[in-house]
Image 1 (cartoon, rainbow, N blue to C red):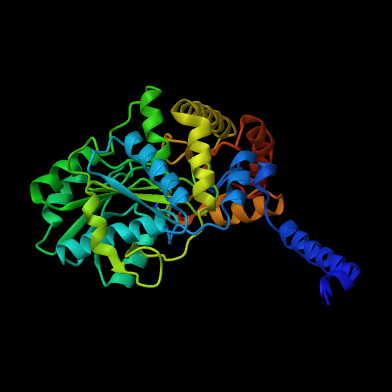
Image 2 (cartoon, rainbow, N blue to C red; image 1 turned 60 degrees about the vertical axis):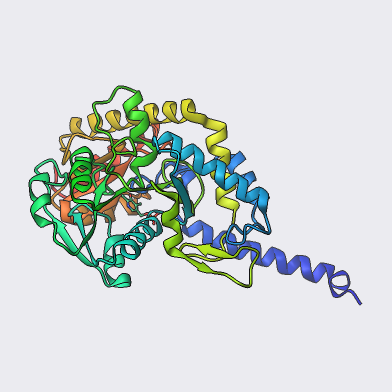
Length: 391
Ligand SMILES: *Cc1c(COP(=O)(O)O)cnc(C)c1O
């Protein structure tokens, strides 16, 4: 007996009921299409990327013997990033779930290779380094920033000890979009034979195009000889769906240090932190780099920067000030009570992020944050700030 056929009507009702519940959950969420998510680093997903995601939803890139075609797509995707970031021929990459896993994996590799247990990070480093400290029993030395919120290079050399495995530089900080002096860090690390990991989770898809657009911005990629690895997220400015990040390594063989024998699947050894992982977001990310190409990304970055300048201008016009002139498409607005303001904006259905440690709120001008969206937002921000005595 085919139960489903007998109960077609019953079944339809059940499905309808589940779909209604899903919609109810979704209605509680902020919708990226509304444009009202201003503080996050995610953005709208292009319909062809959604299609690619669905097409590859049943693949497993953790078991490449099963899906050699998906594996080839992974290689092509990584090659695009390696070439964008001027990697040498012996470099390679590893798909990860995002910036957190990219950072974890990079430090894991340096720990395996050097057998040392200390890293040096700037105070602007992402909170994923706290996880690293706890997970891997790593001592983290945090260095102060300059007045421009980048790593103070004068302290770096004297903070290196015989236990130092790696130094971390940030190319596009999560809070302010600042870029550390990577060229100077590269020189120090090359001299001292220390790994230099660059966290470009947010900036990796932005900085190369800012340079092409003529912005006065420093280098951060493999063109600097001291740079060992780079973490770059496609699910932020690469406009791919979550989860998609990549860890790029100057030497292909380093990945061996975090590979284990994998007897029950189609490959001899599996590298990295995760096991089973879907090729869906990879297919979508691949689709975006093919569809946009370098020219397309450049145009999007250009538009995002124009939106950023527009937002900065509108914010200053109403009498608020910025923590820093924006380096990339990210703005921090100074406020006395950032959490209070964020809360009030939420009641008006606008989502920005409070950064109490910087007495500010963060607005990220992702591709969906257009001047038209900002025009709707500014009067709300102004009225909330007036009510709270910020203006
Ligand atoms: C977003 C971000 C991360 C964390 O990435 P996830 O994708 O959230 O894991 C790490 N570093 C920087 C600089 C980031 O902007």
